[in-house]
Image (cartoon, rainbow, N blue to C red; front, top):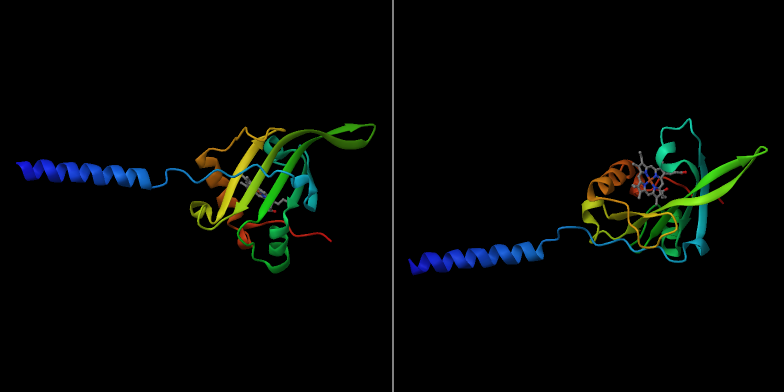
Length: 161
Ligand code: HEC
């Protein structure tokens, strides 16, 4: 009887420690401070005829930090690579289309250990100009990953010289 209680307790403790150790969520992707000073990779413009307009309509500018530039050059993005997809609304007046407010900032961070569950890239989206308001659930991060995983090293864009 005493033994049963003991092993029951031991099992509970073991279970407890496993729950404590096992990661319930990937670590947070930090806001990419200063990315406007990084290398500009390219710009795209998504119009109302595109199915992606609802989420990514307007301009998107892609930026890479110095580590990620190695990835554009070699095809392999090292740990610490950060890529930014900066989405700004577009407004038209007299045939002149210009940038309007920032809609959101998408981020990808390379760390094969921290973000193993999404192929070695961490995904996040920050609302508008906010550095703290995060928009992605684990399920949506999975959608980012599923689409990006179709590309070599999970990156779509190429550096335009
Ligand atoms: C249906 C496919 C698809 C989904 C889903 C998707 N992306 Fe992308 N993403 C793209 C494409 C295509 C580009 C390149 C756009 C261009 O070249 O103008 C891109 C570019 C990017 C870039 C710049 C690096 C690169 O790969 O060129 C980042 C950062 C990014 N996406 C983050 C995200 C995040 C965060 C999510 C989830 C909220 C997400 N993406 C969901 C297709 C997708």
